Length: 285
Image 1 (cartoon, rainbow, N blue to C red):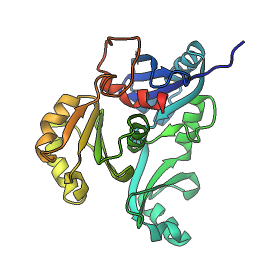
Image 2: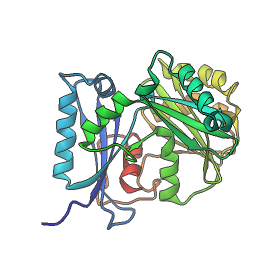
Image 3: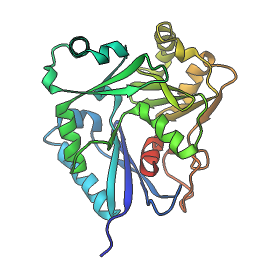
Image 4: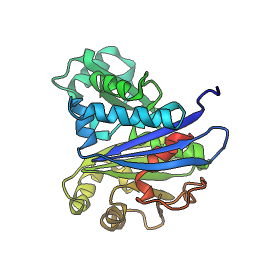
């Protein structure tokens, strides 16, 4: 009996699970892309490990793994389940500074319950700190039926996956929208420059919020050769935010496999493909 050899990428938003399956033997080829609807909010269920609904997510994901003969699973962790901060490298280098900064960021959370990750930035004098709750990592371990190390991807790392697939190493910004969350990351010359996310109630509020955030984070108004837009309500996101982006930027909605530089025997989909873009990249990178 042949060993499982497919890779599964997964992302969640509101009541929808998006997934993509690829086989390493077929480079840049997507076997399948799908959407599964639920009757409850997936992120809320995962965050609370809700006893009534979370087992349903586990069952569906286990069935996907069995049916698709999957050997590896990668999942995008919703930004709302992480805390991101860019800090001077000196904070990382000194134990007492590191712990003090974590205490400020995650006030009220025991440091033993934190899982910090440090990421290199294009400016080597700084690092991006991503903090997760260990309880959430345990939850995702249940979902994956295995360890999460290396298989749980932050939204700002989608840009790294894009560079692996496209071989593009210019300056670009990713703008991904989830229900009530807008995630933004900037890359320059093949390296992550910065990342943040914005919580919002209505897309119409994002114009004001973008200006508010960019007044403290000027890279959001910086020059980017490309701006990749994906996720929920991508069209409305562009309508509200394009006036604040560099006029010379090429704005690309990642709504087709052609734009993703991938191919498949499937030609049509019953849902906006840009919502599955992170899952697709995770399945092939």
